[in-house]
Length: 38
Length: 392
Image (tube, rainbow over all chains, first blue to last red):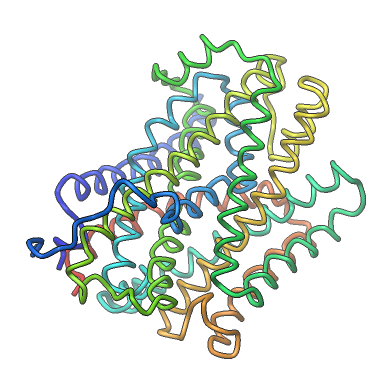
């Protein structure tokens, strides 16, 4: 059933997209701290 | 997958006719708040930020296609699947944050639409807020779903306003194309914040919820459509349709975003106007630089995209809560058949209107909405990715 929903490259691109958004959260936190630290 | 007896997909004809959830989802991504983000990016950072739209394209296509597939395969939207596969606290944590972010987004969109209307025809912004909210809610409740879907499809054309705006300004195309195709990262707070805002705007949880729920909805109105888990013969054709629909919808969304970034970079940024906080402000700032036609087209675009974005935002809140509670949901149902669903939808827009009456600055609220959306997107996407391996 899982295979019907999603296949190889799409699955990994989905995870890449998730990782990019997680990095964004880190980036957002960093950008919030940057003015204070500079 | 048993594909031997699958129907051969018709890939050459009727593609445009089959566009639907993906196209509308992509177009609603360019809501007034999104236009504000892209305008701000172009005004503040110039052409150098354009490449982020090419970067985000495959990422958003993947996650939206997965969302669409979940709805088409199971016959339930994302929230409906999460509540069937995970403990209650998972769905309610996600739904609570989604509702807050969507409501603030609705408020900011209504505020931007009202400011744009005021800019074009004058009058009271607050009256426009109420009028646009009423139009959005009443259309969803009282217009038959098929007709409403067609209206939303036609409304996507309003986004071409931003292509028209691009044609009336003078663009140094060599610089614009360089910014688009050659990635440039600045290690500054402004750049990182804008990058986060752009990705947070293009990849938003309400878009995942909406596309999956619309795929499920299509099955409710079409008796010939069954969830693909029960209809293996149609899977190849339908998964192909979702892919094309999503790729075209997201390409449309990003092309418009690129047009907005280039327009504001070529005008506002070049003239040193870098502090733009909303889409309506961008429209007003364009007038002395690019002329009244650019301002008018930009402002009308905000109103049109808001009429598309507000129903999608409020609708996704209603779908998420309704599916999580296992209520009868769907715009295809008559109001009497889905009272709770339509009540949530109305409440979401009502709260958005109410926020415009408070001293809360919608622009600051939008910033926090983007933060909540950004924080929410990654866990929602992770749940989604884990879900596709365990959906039964």
